Length: 295
Image 1: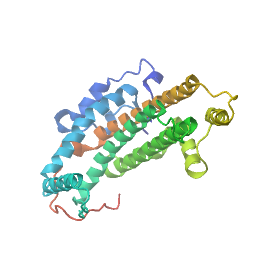
Image 2: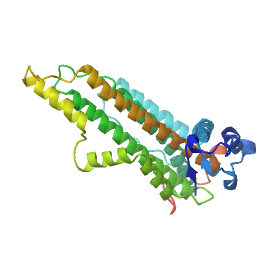
Image 3: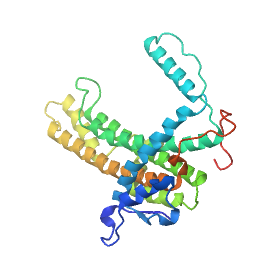
Image 4: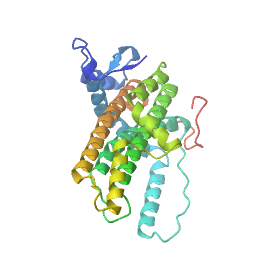
């Protein structure tokens, strides 16, 4: 089973040079052997893997331009997009998705899944900035409502990341060799790390809007002070303290998500041998899209 552990939890004698491990995946055009992979992925290895995998991902995506018909399809898609930007009043013409052969499509799902995963981590970290300012003075949106909306966005971003992560891991396990990745066990680890956020998202989605003691206090004092001049309003300093604590919470969670992106990058380097070469269409180029029984 693959184990993941932050660098701070590892014994100092358990030394693995992450740059040596990751760079060896690219030596002589061959991926790492599964047996040579370290038992634990620590923070340093995860960071090195993220750095190492992007050139391979970018190279694979650029290689798609040599796929028969794809360059022309992409140019036409961009032309239509620009046409709509300049003439938005005109109806958009229907435009079918490009159809790769089955093998290229399977590889594309993994590559695009990693790109989406990285974006999901970035989007989660970016929610810290929504807490930074209250832009609705003079509008019927209270300070507590603003922070509540930001909190719900943050929790949703964590959940989106989780779904993209494990969809990617399932694809890697089903579509690459060798087998043996315990996705269920990794999901248990992830859920334990982000339990508060995932539970909050579940309640938001299935039960009620997010609330907590401080947001309730902020909303109540703002409401009472608006109808009673003698009632004290929570100071801006108090509001900014609450917002600052939320930003710190977001950054701490985003650091955890970045680690998981790095863990996925290690798996990409270890198991996705197609990243070492540009994509090559099989004999049945541009056939209808679809996946085989392994999904």
